[in-house]
Length: 424
Image 1: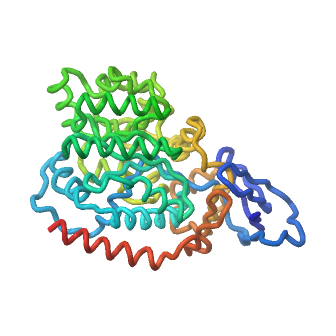
Image 2 (image 1 turned 90 degrees about the vertical axis):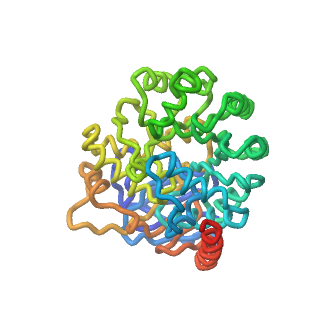
Image 3 (image 1 turned 30 degrees about the vertical axis):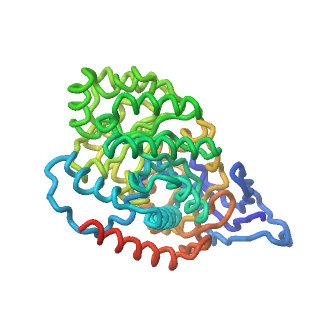
């Protein structure tokens, strides 16, 4: 089915050139768009016409690092013990939550998260999942949920040694089964301090076998470095380099807060990408860093805090005034860099037929020259009215049309209540 958007003010996401136009949108994972002065009359049977009514149309958004497993955490009971450091935050909050997830809770988390992403204009999600006592088929369940909403994705399971050998091996098996079935994704690891040498070796080899990279947290807290130096006599990035992890295709390293100059240079001289999650870093009080030191391969994520990439960009810009005096072009580049990552590593689902229509009516003009000022200080997810993913409308006039949002949220609340009863 062909899709036409009429009466659009199209903003080229790279040049910011603004064109009053109609748009022909091709369907499919590799489809494109064509700007035209005239629409066919009549349009072919089965085609859809969306009237943008003079609103802004541009490329949709993508998330470089998500944790959909945290979706049911909103409003959950307080932990049995108040954490006093990052490791205790993991132990008493997040590891307690992920240990209690079952298969139905995973499905609910994925569906609800996909709804939030879609309604925030996010059509491509890179996710890092954990459910140590419900590992088997967890990635397939997340894929099915995201596919049902109409989102593209790169998934991985967060493998670690923290729950014992059987759980570790289940994570490796799930990853292998998912990737060898032809699904795009990564080999996921938690962080160095929960990953022993045997697991690291197996993960790197599996990534090589599947022609992909690792997706893991790196030096999110100083405890990660302290553990690595104590156990292995080296720092985290050196350990990864020695294991061959930095030679892999398209590895994603999350956070990267507490690295020295040698580690930063090792990452810059590799093919690995860094993903910045400033709201999560602030929430966990793990520290700040100057991400400009890492060069050009930096993208933005949410770390499961939410599913709103415009919000992440604003937070990164405001905090970046303190850490690196980041500019309007600098933060927009990081916001959009995920598209470069996806294209360079050969993943599908992020071509130009992924679009948002923005119902944005500012008190000042929007021009090619001042668009970035509107991006930072004006645009937010409340302006997302219609979302097109792979050439198909999945949100229309702020209403999810690819699935029944009411049923999904009722299911999520049911699973959330059941999860919470297990947490207390």
